[in-house]
Image (cartoon, rainbow, N blue to C red):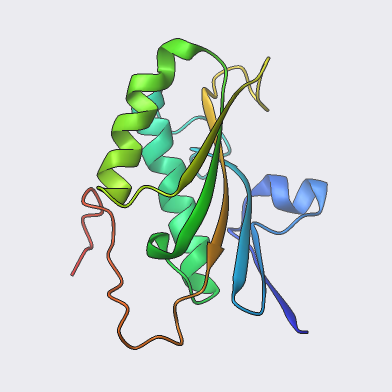
Length: 145
């Protein structure tokens, strides 16, 4: 079976030697993803904004491999403080609406940088072979069709 990999171009991927996402068959997995800016710093200081930024990176990786947020089956959320929960869940609701994937939340001692509040991991199925699939972009994506 062929494995295809995608990069987001982040410095962490090059430094630590991993792919942002990989696809084998119809399965796409996305590495732990934080809401980082182009320099690898937290995109915003709040959990809602960081989750939105992480979801945008995840969505881009999925699309490079023939998927989208529509195909997300399982989402793992790693967070540093339970107080960030409402912001994280609000961003997930914006992105997935009523079609939330299976969800696991894990409290962790810390992430790659003390400014990061949340990290997402995704397991998805590619939808590129199904012409009936409507590829929805998150409501907050300003480039939505």
